[in-house]
Image (tube, rainbow, N blue to C red; front, side, top):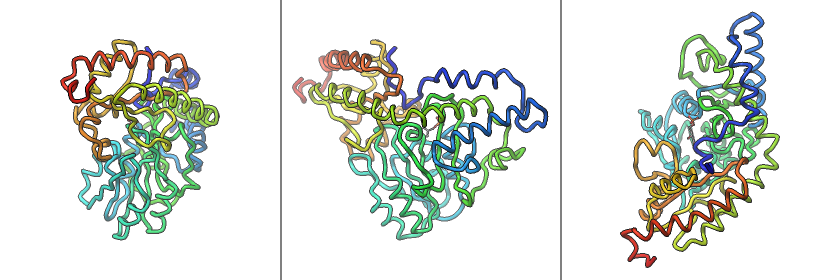
Amino acid sequence: MIYMDNAASSPLRPEVLEAMLPYMRSVGNPSSIHRDGRSARRGVEGARRHVASLLNADPSEILFTSGGTEANNTALRGASGGRLITTSIEHESVLEPCRAQTRPVTYLKPDGSGTISPETLDESLSEPATLVSIMTANNEVGTIQDVRALAGICRRHGAIFHTDMVQAAGKIPVDVRSWGVDMASVSAHKIGGPMGVGALYVRAGTELEPLVLGGGQESGMRSGTENVAGIVGFGEACRLARAEMSRNVPYVSSLRDELVARLLEISHSVLNGHPASRLPGNAHLAFLGVSGEDLIIKLDENGIAASTGSACSVHTQKESHVLRAMGLPAETISSSLRLTLGPQNTAGEVAEVAEAMPRIVSELRSVSPLRGRYGF
Ligand SMILES: Cc1ncc(COP(=O)(O)O)c(C=O)c1O
């Protein structure tokens, strides 16, 4: 299988598994005082330092959660107060908690490339708001926002700034301190770590109520016995991502550029999202006249794992809210495909996909009801 769905989940790195195994075999509860408990505590605290380093935060500002979804929910439901501002291209784990709010929520619209302009945010903040949540990079089209500018505007208006960094952290350099971010969500399984573990960065001094109450773990902000092995694996994934960032960004970008260039040679194909300000591994294209779902099935039959966008859309089978918010025509939306690359992908795999795609697209187009319209 050629795996090009890294934005959905990335393969667990062997080094991460090795780091986790001793903690999966041992019994220690990090709250216990005995030796096994202390060893588990050391594992958790070591991981906290690695997550903090990746984000340029202090370890005391990292709160472990069950993943990006819980981190987003904690940020959005835990910060009390007045109006909330977010965008119409957020992940469902931001949009759903926003919909559940009783306070007013404003949804900012992106431009055609998926970019939220800092001016739009500035204008919206002319009316007071307590909390702003804008993702660092989009999970579907990979567009990266100017988080430093957005956070700066929030600071000037006295609003708390949260950013969903689930797709960005570990893939591009991020810096919560110098960018002036108050809260940031991250997840392990997007960067070679295990599923079911993530973290919320909460800048020291930010007021937040816990979502989960109980034994008071994570400084009372997230009760429940820690997922020690998962957290250790997350820490190792962050350590590796940080150590390899300067090599991986150009490597993955060049694979992606080659793939996009080859796929754009197919007639009636377009690249969605921002041409330059996008995640290194993201290739999101529309092949007019074919359905994205049919493409995925055909690719799967050919040993290639791809996706149309967010994994959540599989449960709802609805049109992508991201592409719709970007104002793309219905034909482009329904014919879109997302291929997401990671550091484990190779030039050989890119060549294979680039070779298979024209054949698959033309097979599907030969039976497309839109054949006449596009003149395939
Ligand atoms: C942008 C974004 N936010 C949040 C999440 C949710 O993260 P998790 O799967 O760790 O709950 C995802 C994962 O699909 C994502 O892509």
